[in-house]
Length: 441
View 1 (tube, rainbow, N blue to C red):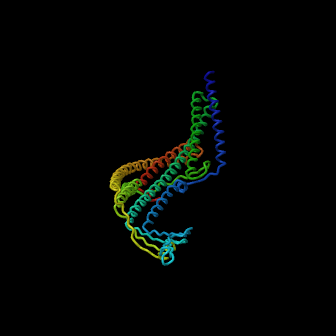
View 2 (view 1 turned 90 degrees about the horizontal axis):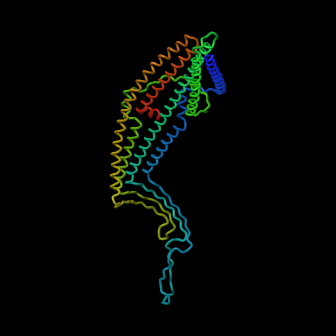
View 3 (view 1 turned 90 degrees about the vertical axis):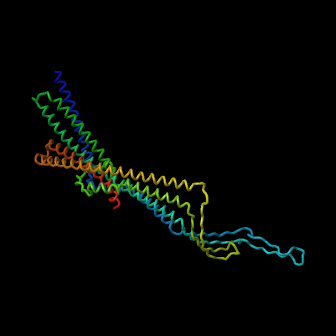
């Protein structure tokens, strides 16, 4: 009696869980069926993400750096200025001179001489062409160009990272969907075994174990459903779709390798974004060092212009002029000397940092090459297993849950291996600078 009551309670609990899971699954299927499915490929998802705000912000930084460089280049050309003034004074702007003293032979004779006119207008147009400051302008342009190149490298790296994030989310959702299919098939298998165990005349020995297996399969299905929902919302957010969008993902084609391992190892030293940034930092440090030395050079400019004026009566109404203006700081208490030493130290620091970055990138490239070879072999093996599972699925009936579970598991492992290989290959391309070249195109 005690064993029978225990078995009955376990069976009742399992049956209640089965009914609850079935009702939940029906509700989920009803909600999902009401949503319009969006079929999308990996390339389309990546294109939508690249057109989003993250990549746009990265390339806006490139635009800002380019405008800054163009503004620095404008200092090569003359500066043309204009001035206009129209002034009225309330008093006579001058002095009165007395020619003869009062009371002598002639009467008093005085003459009013204006220094400035009471009403005056001044119009001036000036042109200034820097001469020696052009050397400073050249170094400023070099610094701005280095910032622009660094911004391009960072923007390309940010775009490549967005592409990698979408690819990872895409494959994780594919894997989760296959795990969901596997969990659904396992639930059918467990329900079938539980029905066989509850048939009249069947021994009660293994009923508790089968009911526990049924409960476990329902838990795994619930976990798989939650995982699919979370990954769907995450991928939809990355590509700019509504969070509740139901996605139908197409299986991505195999990766077309555009770079070999040996070629990647050679290009890593020359085109890696980290090396590009370190090189441009060195360029900026050297330009700043030259700028500090140019503080000893006088600032010389050629100045010319045209003036129309009615302010000073003694001067012509209009005239032109041309000349040379030079300024030089005679003594600054050692500021220039110490600035030169500071900039020279920064050059040495940038050179040392460049060597360290090159060594790190070279070591990382070799490690990535090994990882690409390893993940490629694993991918080939999982593809063979998936092909065998598809053949078994075609041979057996499609409604067989065992065949569906085996195929879903094999495809999940294949997609996981494909994701690992794509991640390693993307890191190899990024180390070799291929991602930056693709983004610039």
